[in-house]
Amino acid sequence: MLNQTDLSKLAPYLAKGKVVNIEVKDRGRKGREVLLEYDNGDKLVGDLNQANFQMRPLKGLTSIASYFARGKYGSNAWRGNCSGLLIRDLLEHYKPDTFGDLAVGSGTSIEVAQDLGYDSSNTVFSDLNPKYGGVDISGPDLDFPLLDFIFFHPPYYVFPGSSMPVYSGKGADGRGMWGDEVNPHDGSRISDQGEFKRWFDTCNANLYKLLRKGGRLAILMGDSRYRGQYYSMFKNMDLFGELEQVIIKQQHNCLTDTIQYSGKFIPLEHEYLVILRKKDPYIIPVQHVKFMQRDVRTSEKMTWAAVLSMILEAHGGRMKSAELEGEMSKHPKGKANNHLAEKLRQELQRHPRMFRRDGADICLARPA
Ligand SMILES: C[S@@+](CC[C@H](N)C(=O)[O-])C[C@H]1O[C@@H](n2cnc3c(N)ncnc32)[C@H](O)[C@@H]1O
Image (tube, rainbow, N blue to C red; front, side):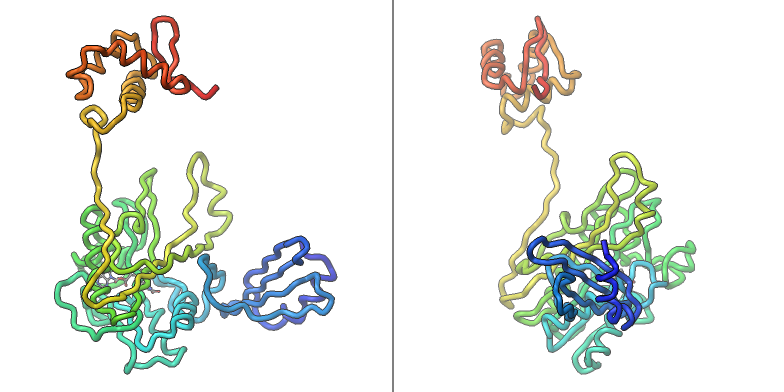
């Protein structure tokens, strides 16, 4: 992709520091855009087609965030630590007067805040980890000043048996990052999905209450998968406050990690950063996620076509019409209906792309 001329144009920029990522996009008549990312997180862009080639700094956030570099913040020995470069970009973008992170983990956000000139007069940091105060943010009675910007990077949902990061109870089972005992308020140790959702919703509600009017809560979260089961924190969570922004953050797993996966498995390479805004001190907009199951066999809300296709599906896709009518009569829609044979005929006529006759059998149709 890069020819000799390109390389000589790039040479002075490649010599400026340790480059961790180069991307080239051919944009046709708009030129050939090249992006360089250095290990401190700085990014430069330029147009390789320009005669007078010059690169300029690329700054700021877009709705897709990608950091190859780790930057100088936080500790990568801390399992599940996040990119300080993202926190830096958020603080530089929103420029909040006061900032807090109440689940600091390895302290990435503390280092970023210090680097940007924040000090103890305008920041608050804590964690369930006693090293950072031992405060449980899912608890009922938090004592913190109201803040303009809160960053929350919770533990992700951990499927029982999976090797995802857990935090408390280092001494208990050799897993975990701190503490002799498993702390029951540690989200990473909650394996029941309903309980985890309640924990996460409670933390988010508590943190939202700690925002000043106009303040923002930025939550970085990821989906989990283990042995064919999938859990999406973003899809399952309640939202408190106005949803102002969703940023998809790309995770840079090694390509070689993905090569071993086969079948229908699509490796997870994204996280969500969700920004919620508190516009009014009194009124909290809430989006509540509720889980339920609808049983086709008892639901009167189903159309006849949906009921018929589910009955056929449950019987291998093919049934004698008398047998199908028998099943229809057991459904609440069919109980008071004395004309099920006519109903069946009518539905077959109305949905020729869904059902077909094959002699005495009724079948689920396939795409023609
Ligand atoms: C994903 S880590 C944060 C990583 C951090 N952003 C970093 O870069 O190092 C999640 C943190 O949440 C903390 N935590 C878990 N449950 C908590 C709770 N109920 N209250 C406060 N912190 C909690 C854990 O101790 C852990 O440090």
